[in-house]
Image: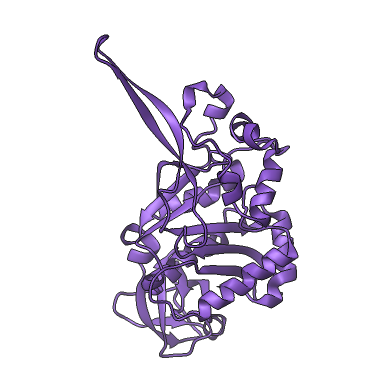
Length: 338
């Protein structure tokens, strides 16, 4: 059985291996021991804190095989962007011009550096073992974060965003970066992303052009990358689209990947989940597959279970499921269909 839980300092060696295997562009998962340790300790502090409103808290989760103890994935939530440093994006909107003398109005798509998405909750750091891609475990890794938000709404903003990794070739070349960022940093795409993971996006973003970049002036290969998802990021994109997330007019400043957004009130795993009392049973007449979580903080757990769920009735869980969730009969769980 797999369970999602908050990260612990003892996870550091396995987490670093996940970082080595992660997709280029997942800058929140750096292959660096000191940075990962800081990320873990920051997360532990966030789970322990008495939070009344969203701030710079970072909640880091790992997906663990309970039988072997092996970590097979990780994901994160940043409670509110822009608290410690500005959160930069490229806004993709038409730049309008007009000539009254010629009676011509024209709109040209343009990319402008902005901080419009500051203050919103950010999903990031999604990574799962290649062998478990497009399995229910991927749903657990992504959606259990949303159930955590639903259980602790005061810790998060009313809107949630995520940046999906944009297109790059198998050899790490990004046509969008080559056409835009490369001119200002003289760094290859993979090195720019690595520096973002080790340091900050801010020092790179501050060197980006402060004036609009007119899309038609970019090479066709770069234009095609705007809003395009990397093939290995497609699953993360698809899961959140099914959750009610939508694309908007913002893209990543380095690879042009799309940004997804949703109001908490429109997210399926939050609005369609329900709280139920637990009843222990060794015999379950399973009628469907569900995501199940407790509503804890530092002891938060989430699993996948075959259950029979009926409105307003207790949910029967096997003792192994109770142990995985760290709960007992009579406690409450949150359930939503897979």
